[in-house]
Structures are given as structure tokens and as C-alpha cells.
Image 1: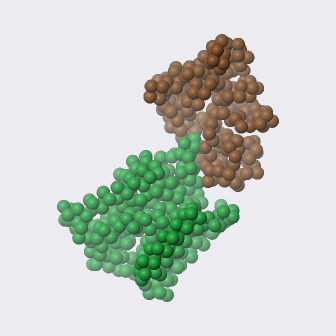
Image 2: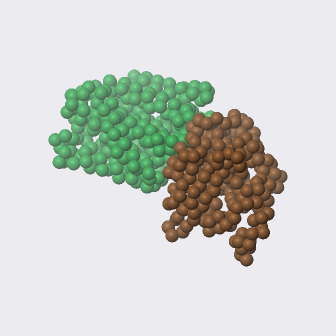
Image 3: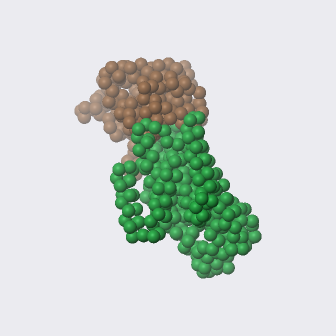
Length: 235
Length: 306
């Protein structure tokens, strides 16, 4: 990439008691780029997102955003700087309406973004705008998470398993949407189990296992990598 | 946004006109004063529990602190009563600042923590070693400034302020952010809301309300004991009225107070044994069939409740 990286992780270590969830992870991501993070359950993908988004503080290592060290920043500060995320288990404000969920992000993050009506349309929730978010099904709630994150006008978007539960045609549409977001200049870090979905979006994938990166490159090369195969197939 | 504000304004006017007119219709001013006290406290609980999800069992601690701080400012520092009431409100805010670490707790832990805190204040105030200042367990006498009519009007003004604040919260982005925090503090933070700050504002605001109401109450009844103003039943009444009517609305605590406190005054004093029974059944039925309060009958049908 010709750009300076937007996000840089340097040797991040995150420990829970004796367990090293992240063991020296480094990566970088540029504006408009999509980076896929894959690996078996418990390999540290979501922990990685939680460290970047400010939910966990790492024991060692640093996170840089736009060249600034942000390792100890709060969630709110991250949102104001333009870092946002979706959650593996969606976390909307359930008793508020879909539109109110977005209004909060719009009013409090105070960053430029697409108009809310366009965002609702983008995630296909226009018809549900006045419904309580708690009445939506799980995939709709994930989409609402995405719309709320977009309503904060992020320049870095961390997406945690958005595709789970979508049918094939919805998956294709979702892939188009994510590509569209990247084309608009947003850097996207994508944690995903559905490898086909990731493959349709990016050639740059990091495979993680036990808190370490074991491979970086495109998925086809990953499939030929003996270490990756050992992790996935137990071989 | 305009329609909700108008309906909130209508509730506001009806409630205040009721309390302004009723003493000349039915000459038991103390009854209406007490009703205003409970309504204002119920709205204070509404701000804290309804909008932010913290259930303050020890809410009476702020009420008692306000009552005592106002009284001591009047008796020892010779403040005019209204200034004393303002000092009472500020004293409660100071207490809430001291107690703000409680906000790190949640659910039952916060409820019990706030209860313990209110008991601590009670034991400090009623301690015989402090008799020189607080008169210890022997209470306060404000007979020299006793002006029941003026204190009644003052209470109407306080209630107006409280109702105004709740209408604002109900219809503002501040209120929306509080509800977001209640639903999910992590998501609220990610949406850019300053979680700790917004929560603290709601906490200070509800303490201020209880402190002002406590001060006005002290002035109105003019003779009281620590057990009067730190009575746990005050917390319980305020909480039950709010839940019975329905939280996060302006109307809910109003309905809760009128139904339950009205009922209490109808038969609670003349026939306490039936009252306790019927009260218990009423609350049980509500919890079983309308856990979100009376207003949820209308809300469920998709109508807006101010």
C-alpha cells in the first residue's frame, strides 16, 4: 500500500490470568484496505479487536492510530477518534427504537457520516426504523450494530463475525456492502469464520492460532501452508 | 419532538394546578404536601432507576441529608428557610459526590450499597456525640420559622422544577444517552457517549432533588427526629410509586403516586390491616401482569406516553 498505515499493532500481549490470549501480535492496516483475521475458536481474533477498540488493555505492546499511541484510550475516546466496531453477539440499545440507536451515535460521536436515512437503507432496516431494537432478530441486530458504528463516522471499522447466520444471497449483498465501505476509504478489520466470504473480499488474511500469527497472505496460499493445515485439520 | 413536549407539558400543568387548587377545596394541606414530597422523590428515583438503571434503596439518605442540612443552616447559621432548602439540596449533592464510587457497582450490589450508605448517614446524624450540632436522636425544631403556607408554595415550585427536569430528560438527547447507558454501557461508549460523566450527572441530579425535597419537608413539618427523615419507608414508597406507574416516563410516577398514595390515604390509616393486604395484592398483580407499570397498558399498543 502506498498510504501510511492507519492502524499499527506492535507486539501486543494480552493475558487473562495464566492464559496468553494474544502473544506478541503485530499488524498494520491502511485506509481503504480490508484485512481478514481468521483462525480457530480461541485463537485470539476477538481479543485482538477488543484490544484495538479499547475494551481490553494489553499487558505489553502498543496500538498506534494515525501515528498516535492509543493503547490506553477509553471506548468513548476511540469512538470520537474514528474507531468503531460491531460485536459478535450484537449489542444494540434494545428498548430504544432502531432510529434512536443511530441518533445516539450521530449526536455523541460528532463525526461526519452519511445521513441516518441512508445508513438505514444501506443495512436494509428502513422499514424497522421505528421498531424497538430488541424486537429485531439476531442478524438484523448485527446490521443495526454495523449501522450504529457507521453513524459514528469511523475511519477504522472492526467487524466481528457479521456474516454468521446470513443466507448465501444475503452474504453476497453483505460482501458488496463491505467492499463499498472500503472503497469509501474506511480501513476494515474483519474477523470471520466463513472463509469463502473473506476470500470474496480481500486477498490479505492473517491466520491466528493460540494468540500468535502463523500466516499472512491470501487464503489460497494459506490453504497450502502446512502449519495452517495442522491448526485447521489437526494434522 | 414537538408533540411529546406538549403532552409532557399537559401532565406538568395538570399536576401543578391540582396541588395549587386542592388545598382550597379540601382543607388538608399536609396531605397534599406529603403527596408532592412523594411525587418529587418518585421522579428522582425515575431519573436514577428509570433512565440509568441504578435502583437506590438508600435514596432516603439524600432526603434526610437535605432535611438536616437545611435545618442546621436555618437554626445554626440563621439562613432564611428558602436559602436553607437550597443548602440542603447542595449538601445532598456533596454527599452524592462522596458516594459516587457506588456507581461502580450494579444491580443488587448498588441497591444494598446505597442502603448501607444511607444508614451510615443516619447513624452519624443521630449520634448523641454530635448533640451539639445535630441534637443527636432528639431531633430538630424549626418552630421559629414555621410558615406552613409558604413552605407549601415552595414545595410546588420544587415539584415544578423536578417535573420540568424529567420532561427535559424524557425528550432530550441527554435522556436518550442515559437510556443507552442503562441498556449497554459498552455500546454507549462506542457510540461516543461519555458513560461515566452522564451517569454521574443523573446521580447528582437525583440527589439534588431528594435534598431540596428533604429541606422543604423539614421546614413544613418543622419538628422531626432522625427516624422521621431517614425512614426507609420513604425510599420504598418512592420506588414502589415509580415502578407501579412505569419508569422512564413523566406520567408513570404521577399515576403511581396518585393511585397508591391515594389508596393509602383512603383506607391505610383507618383500616391498616385491610390496607396492607390489598396493597400487597395490588403490587403482586402488577408485578405479575404489568411489570413495566400502569403506563405499559398504553405503551404496548404503540402509543406515546409522556
